[in-house]
Image 1 (tube, rainbow, N blue to C red):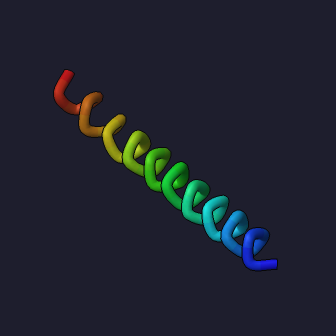
Image 2 (image 1 turned 90 degrees about the vertical axis):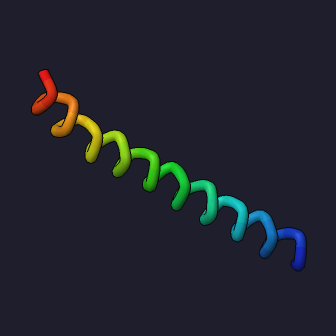
Length: 36
């Protein structure tokens, strides 16, 4: 049971990290467009 809980935690952290990356990419795009 403990191992399964740990796997769920890792998945949630990975998903949060992926979402953060997507938000950063989305935030960078308008800035790069303004620079051009």
